[in-house]
Length: 108
Length: 108
Image 1 (tube, helix red, strand yellow):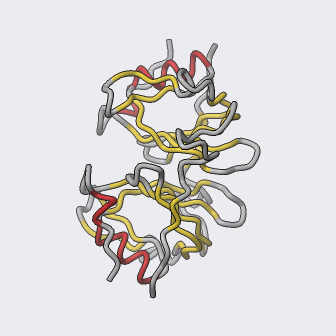
Image 2 (cartoon, chains in turn brown, cyan):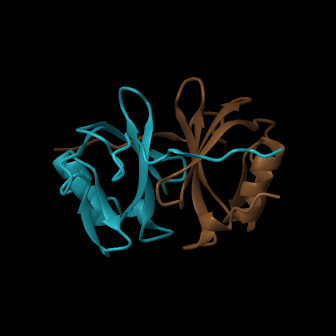
């Protein structure tokens, strides 16, 4: 079993960015604990820790829209993950491909 | 002055993803408080809150490699930002374009 404890030296949860491996669109950001990272690596689909429900969350288990892992990267200080993936369908619960659709206008 | 307090209902800091607007490469993830978001919107360059130094941080102020804002999006539950930007140079302090260069191999 791979040891991912080095990612959790500062915090029990780390942010995990999911990016569409083909279109490069950033799909969502969730949080993962060590077990979620291990499950992501072992199953090949993205797992998060749901902070609101306080439980492990295999993204897509309810909607059917799983995120299939292509590559996983940690950042230079090993406290954030970027997962490139192939989504089965819209990632956002609103039906949007990406959760990032609220544009903030710069009222200068 | 724009009110960004709606982004900080759950936490004083939110994760902010910087993505290259042209290549779509995810460059880094940092954290922002409300003032950092306001400064980003007002100056057009990305500001973070440095958790290690406990101070506002205009990314690039030391290296010269600023991130010039193209668009800013919040996610569906307004607790994460995605900023598309044009970087002046390598974003990572290691000299890498992106901070996400540590590939995690799946030893299955």
